[in-house]
Image 1: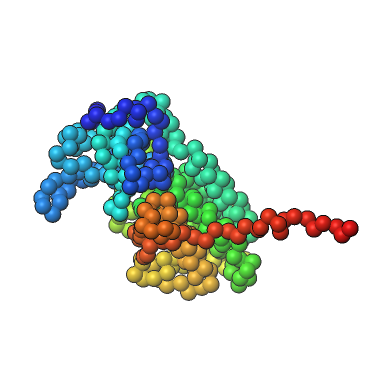
Image 2: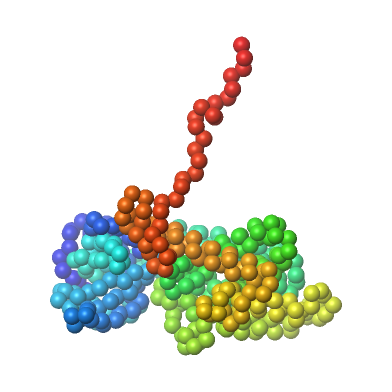
Length: 365
């Protein structure tokens, strides 16, 4: 499948990832190729009634949308594309306040070996997610409460693979295959660091709460075993990840209580039932406000801490992405990127010790 003529140098260069495209494109056109999977296609119209297609694409590093106007030479071909099809997109790419724009867009079928590399995912991100998953397992292994420890192990055994291919969100932060692992790992490191600072926090409960706070997203923001298009399910749409997370933990808890070792937990303090309720409270309250979807407000130290750790990691990820994608509208000032509330300002760099302060003091004569 072909489109309009494009600069010949594009055909000979290796494709870049969506994340690299967002980092390198700007007001000046970037001639480049991108391998991406078609997530969705919608027919829309301008206020003047001019029709256009909005195509959403994704790869292992992120996602973006482009518009194809009705007078474009590729409009009919684009309208006939099958969803989940992987394409080589070639264009002159720019980024403005409305997102990515593709001038002289053309699309082609990738080579078979290119498809294998595409589904394997970006090696840098894959390596990072492997490290993050190992860190999650390491910290969960350190949980002393046998009930919370056992629950984490059942989760890894039954749903570890699905967990590893789930996003933390549909957009805004960690919205990529495996993004939930990145989000949970960073939150778990933060929780582990905070517990010695605030001794009133129950470390076992905090670590398990971080693992399970978004576990309902395994049905809301997950991906197929092969592909980068998030799966839409009736379960996720009708219930949402907080009720689903509560339901999942209750189900796993029942499975755990059927194990022979559970008979020895009768006299443990706090009680097994109290421990289960406090964990469920962390899931139910982690959005912090009724208006943001939490059915209950935080009522324990761990619930407040988890909410703020979750919000902090999400916000810092959005800010990190915004610096790489936003246009610099004035020296050191970057155009606002939704959902952040304001323009960003270039952060203060770390202090550099002057060279003379590093010199060894000379011995007196």
